[in-house]
Image (tube, rainbow, N blue to C red):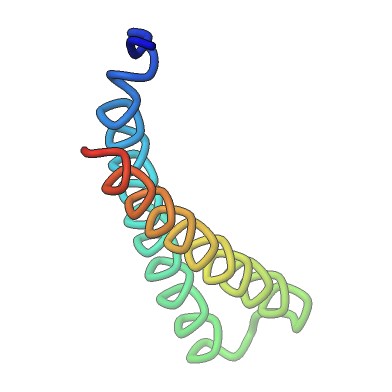
Length: 86
């Protein structure tokens, strides 16, 4: 049975999504770095209310979790693409 066009170009389409995931991981890393700077400034200033520091910390933690999840998805999708012949 011949491969369908969708099946033949699947590795390339998957590889393109892998690149998107990598870019998203980089964006999340950049966001986390900005949040770390904000957190440091809030700590140094000492005038920020506790809820603001807690909010920044929660967003920083969420960035880390999301980045790890996307990195794992990227790695798995990359391995899958390799098995398909990308």
